[in-house]
Image (tube, rainbow, N blue to C red):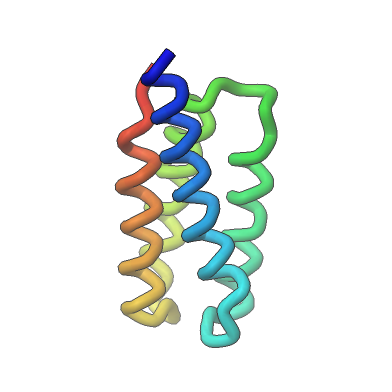
Length: 89
């Protein structure tokens, strides 16, 4: 079950990155709200890790399109997406 362990570690790292973004004072409030909702979805264990990751990637794609987002926040979001993309069944 090395893959499962690796998937959980990738999920944990993605959630940590999203938490950093959500807790940053320089992140706009609307983006913080979206990120907080996504973290809750990632922690909801009703679906498999890969389903939660795929859903979050899709929603993060929408969030990164926000014109009010600072570029460094967008970069951090892409890092989280990269971690989530590494999660496989």
